[in-house]
Image 1 (cartoon, chains in turn cyan, green):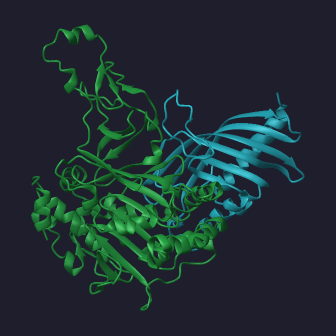
Image 2 (tube, rainbow over the protein chains, first blue to last red):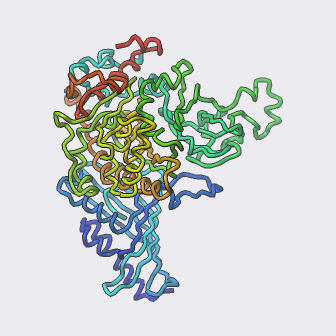
Image 3 (cartoon, rainbow over the protein chains, first blue to last red):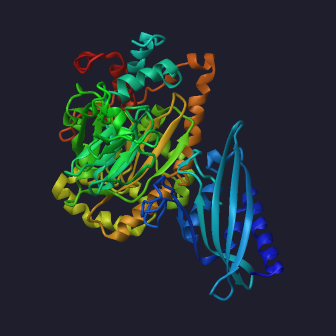
Length: 168
Length: 435
């Protein structure tokens, strides 16, 4: 059981992170990651319960399977003036909920589970809503909490969207 | 001919002069005819053999709007069946992939073997008393024919379709660039990514068939992210590049060897391609060795596309005239080192997947290019497809219809010409005579 103080610290951190994404403040968002961070959003397959392969795995295709450098590359595309599809801007909303915080065996690292709902309004009438469960390892650093690992398991086998021009 | 389709539209008057009727992207009646005369007749990509490694391996996919179950049978052969129970029509397999001993329908318990035969039923005594019940005739409906080309599995619903080798024709010369550049052959990296686009399937297919033109403009920001600069202009007078097509299958390319591959930004891939170039040249000749990772894109008619270099393989599954489901996989050489295979899996993700820095910019263009045609007056305005009208050449080495220059609409015209011929021809014999 973590203290109420730590719980609220994590809650505030995740709410702040979500607002950075809503406001497309990507360089500041990247600053919330550790240098050795792994950001993974695996592709999810519609497989049977008895299937030992599971619905996702590290060796299979993913939406994101990124180091911090990979994330930086994506941000270059988002912020390039030639990213025509980003203008007019997407209307992002990142809702974070169901937050659970656990201590880990590693000093200074917390295991944080949460649920993410990402809604994007685009152009005049386009919208897409994606749902996923997250599992983060947050590390305590001199600068505050930082994301060391993130896993987002989407609730979709066929992505109900044409793209993912955001992060979760 | 289906009522409601205009014969003049289907013959695509004006295409030879470089004009396309927008109704091909919008009309429900045209779409219904496509399902009957293209998707229920052509050879369609259904799997890579590596996705079905052992007896019982299966996957479900689409042939047009027909859901199909593709299975590795006990004898090692591959079968494909309509994924619909002959009793009440329910799907008999609800997973997209896996391993099974057989398939049991959830509704009334009809049970099918890997070869599609009906092996058993729930409440069998009742059926036993029924003279009309002929178990041997109530198996899953198989496709008309299934065949492979160097690892790729194709199927057709049409028993009169020409053999797969004839359907592909001279295009196999080009397919070998991807499928036979290494002695070990190819496989799909694990998994697949699926997404939904609000566009007509042909807008995506024609993009891969020939649209090198959009690369430098649409994908300027993606190139900035992956190679630190924009895409160089591809249309110089002396550009060593081509549009080639055969039977509606299209490949646009230059001969820079690594232009597409370079966008993955991974040295392991570049080193692998460079180290192999000489061996590839021994297998396929100097010219094709320079196509392996070059700036290029491909569509195998009607809806199976890929990008050499990025190695994304995909189908554009039609879901109505204004909706497409995109299924993607990553092709690698089976004998490539594991770290190179993994680099390709990641590289395709970074570039051509729903989160990829290139693909992200395609979807909106295709959706709005489709949706504009809702306007009845907009729909009356023809679209310009006139680039490269006099670029046809004879080439000493390249087979099929060859056009000089990859900034060209020649392949797109060839794609729609094939489309038009198939919609108008009642039989494959007619097709040969249809201009």
